[in-house]
Length: 302
Image (cartoon, rainbow, N blue to C red; front, side, top):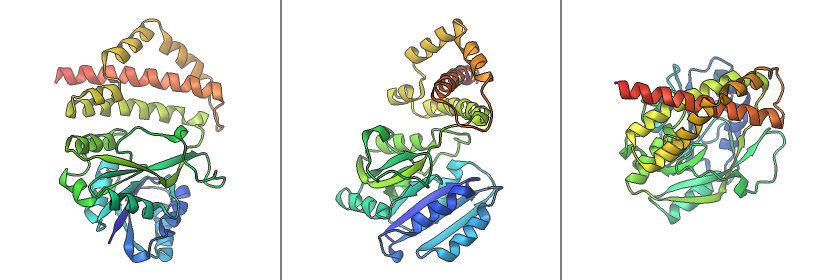
């Protein structure tokens, strides 16, 4: 088996059917790759989507059901079941193009030991897709971003897979990228290994969930910094004197409270306007750094 597409899913039944169909419709022969899906305790119609997908899959399709245990654990379950020489990670909101696996393998042929980063085009709908041409506006500087990345299966197993101490939202893939970097694994970028990434404009009724994610990401940021006390980590997470000092000054001026007041009036099942989205993002940044300070204090008290 030349490649494994590995993805985890949680309550994304509405997207998953399209994602799996795209995984099955690759230009490689069906016996050259497989799809390994981990259903992380979904409570929607995901199980029914999986059963329908089994009937359509031409390549080997393995679906594992587990109780909700988080993305890091789910990834490790997928790694354990993978049989491809290369493992390609995507998310359950990523629609790969037909030549997706072929392009990842083309880069691995040229760079056998490398991480291969693919391109992702952010879209608000899978029903109205732009031309499949990647541009810098969709660039991500992450070395190992599981929206679209591949690596030799033996390499990811050699570093122990994903760290399951990242039980909350955020940073588990960055941790893998740092460990691979420190192990001397280089990365290459192939913009033709392309996928569409579903990124709809946030709605008013999603703000509370977005704040919970921001605070969870702040807590896991402190976990990341403890594991990797390195300037790259401090810069990525904001755990550095410049960013912490700036947000401390904003808190002293009462800016977070004003932002909360402005956001309090936003609601409803409708997309946020441009100005509302900017205000919400500023509020989320304040919440992130507020939680970051709490997590740092808690770490110091242990």
